[in-house]
Image (cartoon, rainbow, N blue to C red):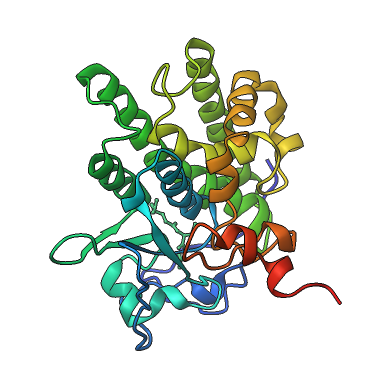
Length: 291
Ligand SMILES: N[C@@H](CCC(=O)N[C@@H](CS)C(=O)NCC(=O)O)C(=O)O
């Protein structure tokens, strides 16, 4: 083990604003808004405030799946919250999500708007509202919710643990990378063993559990996050790769991952979505054609 630091924690921690890590500018030890800014509200029943990170994609995939099933009440306006610029600290966003993280949903379909934050809570809210993608039979429901909550508990080790120390921290700390690489490989093995037993995480049917896990672990399995495919040898998790590829083929998934996306191929970016036809007319290649 290489010694990389001789740091000894002081008696009282102090906020060192110049910590140098990627995203340091949006990392703070305090909650609450930094500035006044109301959220826009469109004409659709559901208002989503988000960005196309894996946590954001879970919800846009679900909304597109619901619309594909014919649930017109799932029509939504998707507004861009640029977390790199600190939009999550605006007063309106903090009122929708006191945790200042995307995604946040405000459901305007009832007599009073309902705010929902935490992607897992948003998926359950939508699944119950439309009676879709969450089985009602007790055993199947329990299995689905177990995998959904597995994602909520596990992904912080992947993103905040492995991803942070492998890709974003200003120094490479062998101990931290080793510890979280071990945990992430264990998590991939958990998924691989489950997906050897059944086509989807909840069993025979595709559910909100798959929608929550796929944007993180599917992307990881294909080497699309943190450039860590080779390091973690993700191709070896063959059941995860099979499941990842099958979900990627779903038309609603193809649409969902484009929403609130502001990077990559211009044709893959639908920065704001206000109606279904926006996928044909408002992608970045159409809005700003290369001259
Ligand atoms: N557990 C939350 C995690 C949400 C989350 O971490 N969102 C990130 C983007 S992927 C974010 O908004 N980060 C901005 C920040 O931390 O200031 C959920 O599932 O909704």
